[in-house]
Length: 284
Image (cartoon, rainbow, N blue to C red):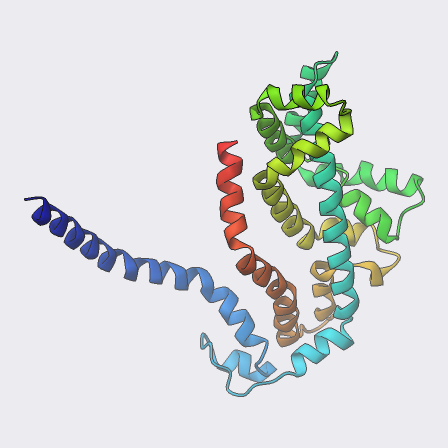
């Protein structure tokens, strides 16, 4: 009887997979098609891109688009700036959010609740609405048209979501661990350094989210480097393909490919950490 029931369940599972597989393939193709078409267009000629329609196969491979994007449009410099801005701002956001979350979760002090609510309240403030006060602050600091100014503006927000993730994690850590560290004579920073490695899932989520956000940031690099266009990033650099009377669409596609392929490779390489990080952060 048991053998028959198991065989029936396996048969039911196989039928379910046969139905779900084509549906998932169609959804996956619809989702991936714009990316695949952009990559394909990067290898086409200007005329071939319009005559080939929706085809993903170039009539002939043309690598001049990548040379034009990398050399003529200055994407080598934009790429360096993008990597620098993304890495440094992600590191600053991570340290800032972890310390803030640690203090809010483990320490009682006057104004703690008010501070926590103010940080949560920043979740509802549009990012674009604070760019003017940020601009004034960076200008008064003498950092306008500098890489330091862009990095400071990118990492200068409250990072409310990241702080909430760390508050949730540090609140879930047993108090005995903190008491044991205190008995061993550990101070604030040493205790923080001992507990932080336990927050790997949260750290993974913060790093991935902030790195992607910084990589795709457009407004801050554009506004804060108007006097120094060579300090802009890949997202802003895409505008260099738009002329007064015409747009270099194949160069634009090559630039898009250069811009998102590194992120795609990083995601594919770290996808297990990404999935486990999200699951761990949710549990925390």
